[in-house]
Image 1 (cartoon, rainbow, N blue to C red):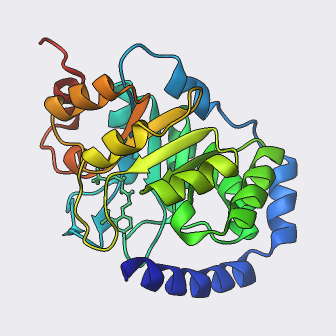
Image 2 (cartoon, rainbow, N blue to C red; image 1 turned 90 degrees about the horizontal axis):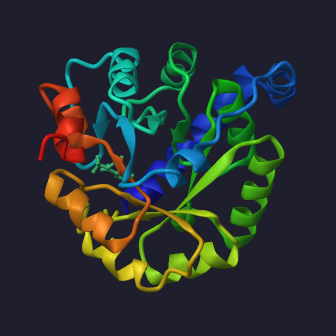
Image 3 (cartoon, rainbow, N blue to C red; image 1 turned 90 degrees about the vertical axis):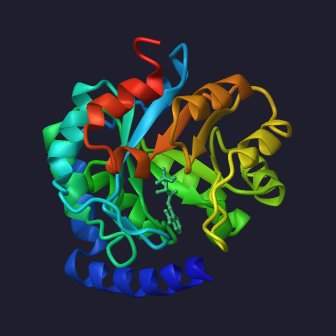
Amino acid sequence: MILDKIIRQKRLTIEKEKMKMPLHRIFSILEEGRQPLDFKRVLKNKSGLSIIAEVKRASPSRGVIREDFNPLDIARIYHQNKVEAISVLTEEDFFQGSSQYLSQIRRGTDIPLLRKDFIIEPYQIYQSKALGADAILLITAVLSIEELILFQRSAKEIGLQCLVEVHNQKELEVALEADAEIIGINNRDLKTFETDLETTADLMKKMPKGKIIVSESGIHTREDMKYLESLGVDGVLIGESLMRADSIGDKIRELRGVGD
Ligand SMILES: O=C(O)c1ccccc1NCC(=O)[C@H](O)[C@H](O)COP(=O)(O)O
């Protein structure tokens, strides 16, 4: 399965990164560091759906999504169009992302940034903060419950928030047991790559009150937005449909229903 391949490669990448930037050097950067922005607050405090707009050049399911790709320009367009947060894909081998994109976008914008990567070691949590993230993605499918609890705790200690991703009922139960506050329901089946918003509909029925919910993947139209809003989710994470748009600003307005 693709996820296993990604994780195998990730382990090698992390070893190289640790050699280039050992943890004690990351800690010294963190000592002078900034206070992270409140990702949770921007998701919660809004009538209508909050948009987390993703900077995503390529993916395993689609190959290259956007040829004309300048991450900072894209982030600035997102910011000008008042999305609530930006997700930056930093994984290099399968998504053509980069850690540099995150630090560049941090320097060029002041809205909450989610580091979108495959976090499997505590090292990456400290690295995410040093790169300028305000929140990190934790994927339940690749972590044990013990890791999920520990990683959330470590993130919290340094002021980072966690978006805990689930795709089915079993993963949701793990996320709830680990006391996740912000839960991302990924509509993409990582075995078939198919997206189906009914994944969000199904898991919303099992969601206890008080959680902040983000629906992720496969969101393309105003109709999709209206449907997800009717299900009671707080936010959406959108990559491909923004990346493929000729005018990103027009696409954001269309998704929000501006002028309807
Ligand atoms: O996008 C993929 O093909 C993919 C494959 C394997 C693991 C994760 C993958 N995507 C990560 C994401 O969660 C999406 O980038 C994000 O939810 C935005 O999705 P979309 O709007 O469909 O680009």
